[in-house]
Image 1 (cartoon, rainbow, N blue to C red):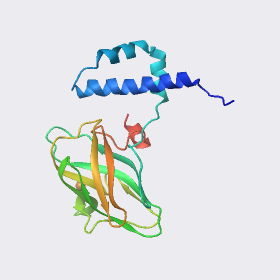
Image 2: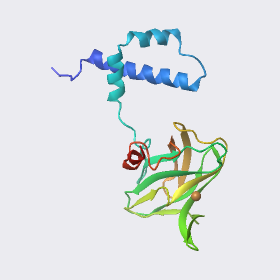
Image 3: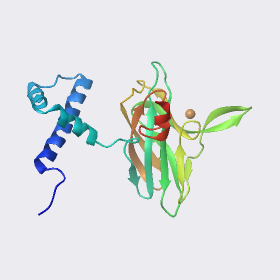
Image 4: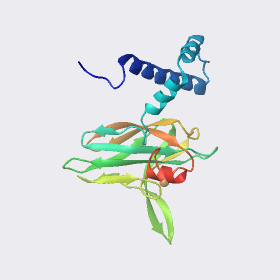
Length: 205
Ligand SMILES: [Cu+2]
């Protein structure tokens, strides 16, 4: 007989509680419609400790999803909230090339910005300035390339609506070999230094 650490019915309750909490939270945040009476009675039926346990059991997210495309693994994905009227912003992630041949990130697009470029930081007259990376960003075989503040980064320009903390920005990356890869960038606080849950992020708090 198989032993469960939690009786199946309790596990189900936990999952249900978590799902309902998320549904209720997004319904309230979206403001599109109020939580339905049925949802209310479900929530009332769930004991507070159960709900708290369910919330606690959910894993901490670090920079959204990790996306695999061929030999490439993209993780630590994040972007930053913008101030009202700020038309540009950076995008960050880490690309690991587990393959035997180099690839190259050639273009970026998102419905949330008019334009997106890959930038590097270079010294010019003793000042660090941003520059578009000509011909794309090389991802050498067996290496990891980090896009982070002060280094390589994506630059979103002509942003239609300032990115808001908690939003997800859909971005299409295009690689020479791996082709088109869809990622979702979680929007962190305007003063964040790294993806949620990372050491850099912790230092800020
Ligand atoms: Cu830039």
